[in-house]
Amino acid sequence: MPNNHTKPKIYRNDQVQAAIQELFSYEDFLAGMKAFVPPQLNKLILDEKDSVETAEDFQKKVIRPFLKAIEKSSISTFTYSGTEHLSPEQSYLFVSNHRDIVLDSAYLNIILLEQGMRTSQIAIGDNLVANRLTELLFKINKSFVVKRSGNPREIYNHAVRLSEYIKETVTNKKDSIWIAQREGRAKDGNDKTQISLLKMLSLANKTTPIQHFKSLNITPVSISYEYDPCGYLKTKEYLDKKSNPNYKKVFHDDAQHLLLGIKGYKGHVHFHFEKPLNKRLDVLKEESNPKETLQRLAAIIDTAILLNYQLHPINYYAYDTLLDSNQYNSQYKHSIKELKHFFDNLIEMLPPEKQTEGRAFMLKIYANPLHNKLRNEK
Image (cartoon, rainbow, N blue to C red; front, side, top):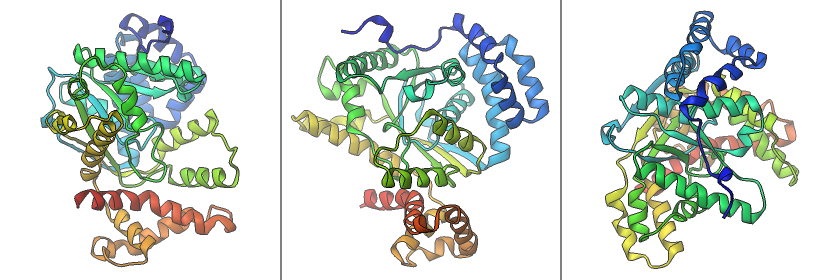
């Protein structure tokens, strides 16, 4: 087994204050705040930072006002549903689709705060802590690191520790945990739970699969963004990977996605909390093969996420345009001109020889949520 230092962990409350002082000592961070936050709010955050003693203080006094400013500037409507399924006495393993590097978990935690609940811990990839500034920001915000690099033995040992940490945190009701249903964001809007994630969660199993997964209190969350601010960057990345199989995203690319995700226009953003899956997991009893058990569990999570995805005219327009049909014309007929203009503007930024393929990929980003919802309704 690996040494203790590989065990996932978040900052203890007695580490938060020093981390905040370090964070606010970086000129880049202060400059970023000035660029993103209205002057009055910037002053309020700078005044409040010295009174922050815990992660939840930081979320209330720094993150919440920051997210409210983002809401005003880049979200037309922010809504959520299903919080009646949650109890402040319980801890949950929130498994959600993944649209934005920072905002998915940040807004989920603000919803929990507004419901009088403890905020959840956040699982993030080690690619996001390649820079000290982002490492501080994520860790102060109750994040722990999921190791994705290293040799197979190191990665397996880390996965065991991670699985044990998640089980212990949730079952001892220390905190809820948020984790994305797959490694990285779904670049083409095709939300699907990775079997490898469920395999990692099963590594701490000391009973039967059904009892183990019930103990985790798995609660699917559907996150819907009307417009994806990173749609163009995702399309460009897809085309770059296709033309260069050795293409590797670097931290600078993640930072670009992170900043555009925060600043770019998102339209209507909706979070839906499904009921914890416990009763629905009884079907797992029938499975004797571990692989089939995980596939069945993935299908249950996928159905819960996809059926509660909030669709908009752009999803129906993209679906029809891809299939060259007008089946859903009634859903977008009043905004055809604007939607066509939206895609045309983004496609024009690509090199001419890549525009046809780029358009098809960008349409998929918006068509896939509808395609998946229709498939799961059958």
